[in-house]
Length: 526
Image: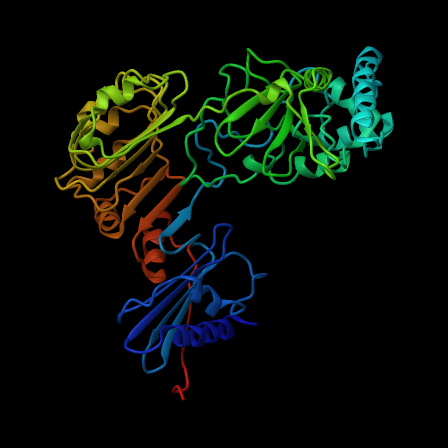
């Protein structure tokens, strides 16, 4: 299907979806990694739910190279179809200029391999193998006595097979994990040998390691784009696991198949231990045990003490191992209806060693100095406020701040050393960006919809790499002669037509922004 045919097909689908009562309809489709489909008319609100996705299903070839498509259709059937491979997304319009740029604590692949993790042909440490063998044998004996049958385990793997897997991930596994694979190729029955978790096959270990970015397994495999990547929070307990979104040397080896996955950490923080077992969820990594051996020991100890549950017909023992006893501590504090509360008392009741993110909503006048007791905060949001005074000097670790209010004074932010992400919205007064030039690490800024008289002040933000503006702000910025050549990504909020987006990008980065245009006319509707 050529581009002209794609345009006609999309125009037909758009007309069918739009119904009656409009003079112009617009369809925008983004085909990149973070795709989207958006459509609207100048008539009554048609909505953009499931019916739009259903209407466009199969209308464009998904095997085409990434591009954006736009159709502008008149009620008389005339349409204009445009497409560009150089705009990453529409609704909102977005362009990533430097795809290799990474937000803080989000390392690129290629991290140096830790000393001692090089793959070798040396056999598994015999002493470790004997210790793990004894633990596995005792588990098997007790499991058989409890259930009446032997555990369903796949046969162990040879030294050569383990070494081959290690060569593919370019790292030697911890000796106790190697020993476990020498004895059991996979806990296919999920017997309880590692508590609620079970180890996968070596083939799955390799597959998971290379699933996305090296070492980015499951929860970390979705590498968020620059314009959306959030703060990376401190793992629990602090000081044991490096504060990174992913690590080349986290090697996933199992899970509970309910979206909880475990990995051996070959690159721990200063207070950690190589070979420690971690669970990596959506935001905060969690230390499970100092080693696979410790996990096995905890399970066998629990069996000896009778701390297990067996359900008839279920091959798995629910073992209450010590590593399952760590209580979950929510690192996010949400305080709603601030106007009705004693905010100082609310904050005083929280554990400053746990809370890393705090969001306040629905207040009147709030001074963020009230949060200083929670000095481990890395993310703060103040939403639907009348006035926010961003006194955050007492939050030395703060990295991300969102203010949605009628009024604020940015002078209170001056000189903050770690703030790299700032979102401002809803402000009803002219905004002076001058104080932001004192923020040495301000990397990402969202200011669309605000009245910023001196928009050229953006040129003084030397660390700025990711920016969200509206079309009016961008027009004035370009008119001032500033092109912000250091930007890694730009988002233009609101509904921006593709030719307009291409025009902006050509002014910012030259004429190497391609746009193809086709026109046509549909037959009258029957």
